[in-house]
Length: 115
Image (cartoon, rainbow, N blue to C red; front, side):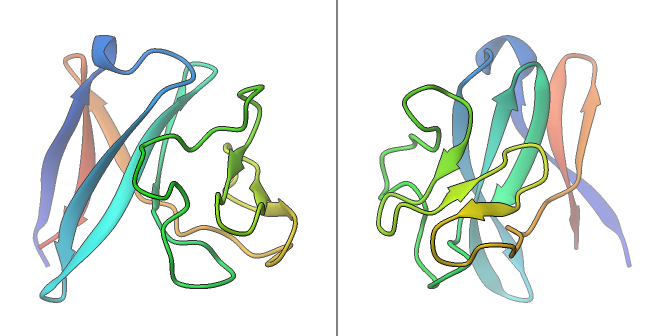
C-alpha cells in the first residue's frame, strides 16, 4: 500500500475556530471530510454524522457550535468533542466520528491517504 499526502490548507489559512471541507477517494468512492483548527490543534474527520449517514454541516462549512467548543450535527443537534471526535450529546452518544490522519510539513496541513 502506498501512502500519499493530499494538501488541505496552509496553516495561516486555517485560524483557530475555523474549518475547511475537502474530499478524497477511498476504494473508488468520493469521501467528504473536513479539517478543523481546534484551539491550535488540527484534526480531520469524515463529514458524516454517527447517527445517520448525512453531513454534519448541511453544506455550509460551519461545524462548530456558536461558542466554538464543540462540533454539532445541524440536522440532529448531536454534539461532538472536537479533540476526540466522540459524540457527547444527542443521538449517537458515545460513538466516534471517523478520524483521518494528518501531517504538517513546511506550514502545510496534509491528509495521509491510502492510495
